[in-house]
Length: 199
Image (cartoon, rainbow, N blue to C red; front, side):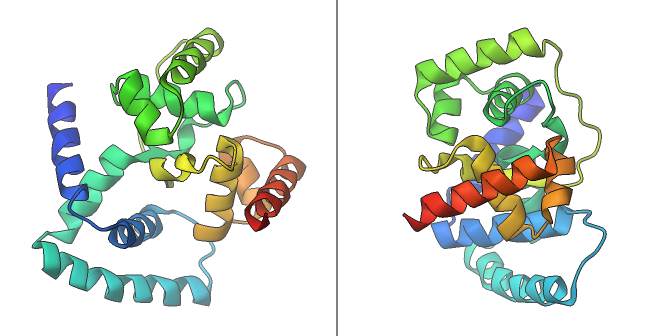
């Protein structure tokens, strides 16, 4: 556990050097690299090549080894998609994982997901009643950046559906499988989120 906390501090230190645009590029590149999506389209491959070109100057500017950077960011700032389940809401799942698996305190979690600290405490207690055991993840198919949950306009479920649909380019059916939800629910949530963003 000490090693995990040490890596967390190191990862946050490196990550803090990046501009918001650089962070977004790293998130997308890391997610695409770690994704095990079966059917990559020609557009996906072109997108991947463009991201690789965009990453190069970031590596030079900050004097960082890109492989180590990706590992650290994935370890500390991403959530494995396998934690999402039928028992808990998306927000309950996120809070429980950050509290128990990452050992963040409630204040840190509230900062990461842009929620009131007291609300985070209640969410965590609710999650424990529904799902008492620790999440055990051996290998992740895709990683979700914690930063997507900071948009106060969208619910946690809306945020993750939009991210998986627009950034990771999954179909509604694939998203439903990943999040353990019904296909129609995913479509409805995505449609509602788009309307909110338009406004």
